[in-house]
Structure formats: structure tokens, C-alpha cells
Image 1: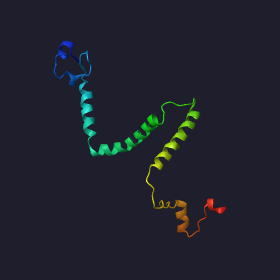
Image 2: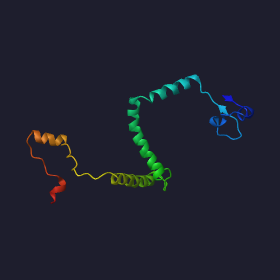
Image 3: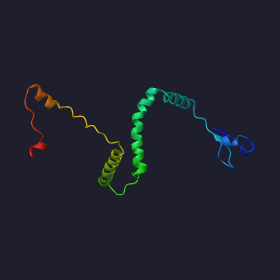
Length: 139
């Protein structure tokens, strides 16, 4: 650690670029060589396209966590106990998803049809008629 006395700092013309302290002196810490080398290596690695691609996935999750914590007050729970806290978290998550969906532009295309399941593929291969959906049986 390097320490500079007030008598050394105050008369300096570039003091405002060194410290924001009005009356204090400047202290500069130097990490151990191994830590410094690690910091340099990691900072260089963070500039590569591969690292940025990997981090893009995490940044999406980090943004969601930040939205919950700061935008919806999820740092503090209104209830005690894990079960009651869960009751708060689930409706909040549903509300956030609805909010996000409402901001999407409307689409004119129908959503793509679902891929057949392995069971449905088996029925088709063996020319067995598929059972109707249970939802449609009553109508």
C-alpha cells in the first residue's frame, strides 16, 4: 500500500483526478502479483467473442433477477415462512410474464404446430388411428 500525506496531495494540480476526498490524503493499494496477473488475464478474456457469447445467457438471467429485486420489491418478503414467501413469488412471476407479453408486438401468424410426440409417431408408423384429444371429447 502506498500512502500520500496531505502535504503531498493538496498542492498537486492533478489532485482532482486522483481522489474525491476534500481533506484526506490518497491511499493506493497494490494487489499481490498472482492476483494482479489473474485480473489482467480475466479482463483480457472478457474481451473475446466466445466469452461475450457465454455471458449473454447469464446477462439475461441477471436482468430478470435485477427486475424482480428492484422493480418489484422482491428483496423483502411480506410474509414469514418459505411456503408463504412462495405464495408471494409465484403471482409476482406471473404478473411479470404477463407484463412482458403485453409489451410484445402483435403477430398475425398462427403459432407453429407442436411436433408429434414419440407415441404419436409410433401410432402413425403402425397406421393406428390417433385417439382424439381429451379436451375435445366432451364437445
